Amino acid sequence: MRLLIVEDEKRLADVLKTAFEEKKYMVDVVYDGKDGLDYAESGIYDVIILDVMLPRMNGFEVIKALRDRKIDTPTLILTAKDQLPDKLKGLDLGADDYMTKPFSTEELLMRVRVISRRKGEVVLDEMTYKDLVFNISSSMLSCKDTDKSVHLNFKESELLKLLLARPEVIISKEEIITKVWGYDSDAGDNNVEAYVSFLRRKIGFVGSRVSVISQTKLGYKLGDNQC
Ligand code: CA
Image (cartoon, rainbow, N blue to C red; front, top):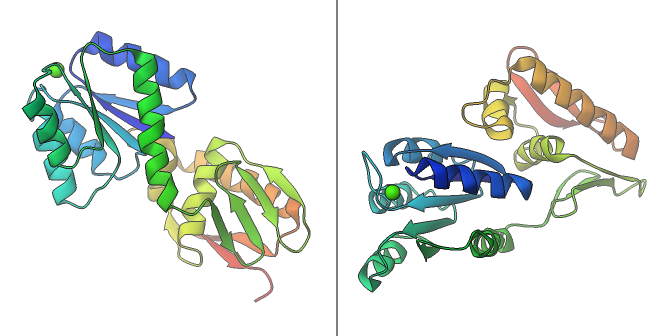
């Protein structure tokens, strides 16, 4: 799960980052609305936590711009104002939930789980291509023909999901880096190559006929060995 926190109170942002990282989220933090929109537009996040009172662009403007651009990432708004009109405004603009400051971190964690699950319900829990099956919630990779299975770690899972979403289409290394490592990570081609080789080993282990095919200088795609 990848989470974006848009919050200009740095201490609060740090506390939230730590709390979510302990729950195994990958967290990016930005401190103003404009950066929040830029990051969120990448579409790589599973959930966004968005403050309302922010420099450069307020949270309402950010959520409106995202929804106008058809980016439907589940978003929870944090508001210091507990007046009803503000809460309604956020929901009206397309937010999925809101919390009023001050709030308990436990409750925020719980609500983020709920809104991310809401998104998950419309997405299939299983992705398949040929004889290869990946179960998203258990991170188990298996092969229909051999009944063998193996667990994938977080980055292997993210990489495989990206490839399975568009099998037989080349995915560039840049796209892989952005979506698997994050918007401003310093990961490079060698990280991608390493994870592709881990993934190949596991696909080989389950005995699938699918392979991760390299296209020199372009990227990778899933293909069928037996074609
Ligand atoms: Ca604020």
